[in-house]
Length: 472
Length: 129
Image (cartoon, rainbow over all chains, first blue to last red):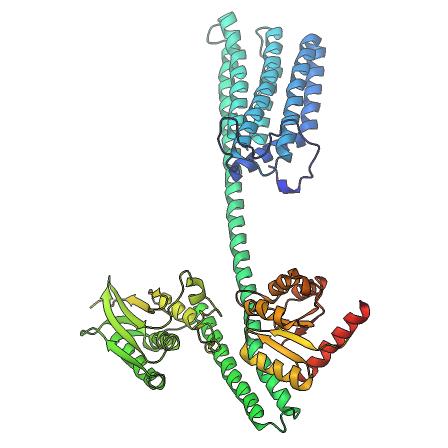
């Protein structure tokens, strides 16, 4: 079994058999990329063949020598020549396959045909030799030729299982010769059933069956090996992707934390060095900056830790049967004073009946508060925010509608993304951490629900959150 | 030739305020500030700064992108640039320097020292030219 990565093979001289890459075939078909497993099979096969070249050569020479000495130099020489022709053809094709890169499916199929041809030629040469040997021996027990065929068949089973078609071709050729030899003797002599020639025939059948069994086992083992490699590769890719996401997140977080810190330390440095000794209002401005960014940094840290907690599944939600209408009312009450300051009225248009869901009440409050504060941020005074609730498709849905600037099309990633905020249009993107909706989405999705929005730029936005309705 | 006009681009308002205090009051430079690359591309030709002070991580157009866009204009092809960043990766920072940035100022920065850092980098660049 070969154990290597074909990417490691150093490229060799250009090969005669490498077809032109990625050209449109004369019949107008566009090339399709090669099936990776087929490519691996072909390369394993070709590489294996090249590695065993000298072993095969030594076997040919040894057997030819024996044949020359004990039976017929002519047979030995002719067979050796034919075998070598097949070997040379196989060598060039195998080398082309090994050096082949970024192939197409059409190229792969062509290589498979060529390798099949080479193998069949080779097997036929060996079989012809064995048959010739047997014929020259006459109707006697044929130890040498049958052993040669058996050995070749076993060799094929062990070394050619990467491409089942080629293995099959070889076994058919060897098998046919293997059976032909005893059958020919039987046909020639027509002995009674007690003759050793019948025993020879029976043995041949049994041995052939054994070789086929071996081949199947090797085939199965190879396939399992390939499956395992595929699984490992997928796992590794998944782990790598997760690591990359985490790396990027860590880098982004450290940047986000340093930004308010810059303002805090900067303003305090300036103050501390007496730059504004004679300008009390500028000094006041510095203190404001420091204060504001301390709050910002605090909120950011809280949100980050919250997000981390939610994602690590250690969120420990306190799930209880909760009336979502009540949660909505409470969230609206909490934000009422802030809305009044901005001259924005919040209207509740909730369903008459209680809408129960199995949720963590505090977390749902957190989600609705986030939606409401976003609606406030995006509305210009005077304006109205409408909160509605309903059951849709077995989900308790609560919608928060504002009449603000709206969200441009295709901004989904910015809306729900981390540290990204859609511009509210009046330069106040300093408010908020950019994590609120990301956290809200995580919370709701962990409850088996969803958050989505519909927006018309210039007219307003409606955010809808849904959680599964509790069984009554 | 002394350094007089600096164009500062940063998307964070508070950092712009701090930098303004630092460069105008402590350093005595003539300063123009922009909140985005888009704005900077309009202001730069009018202001004709001697030096660019650019934040790296900005939405829509990064500091690096802005710098390359400005260098495409003939009047700014040779204008030196100093980058401010909270970004940690050393490899990223070295590639900016290799591309020709004068210096990198790491955030958080000391507003009392900023002007001096800029002047030193400017002088070194002038002497080398």
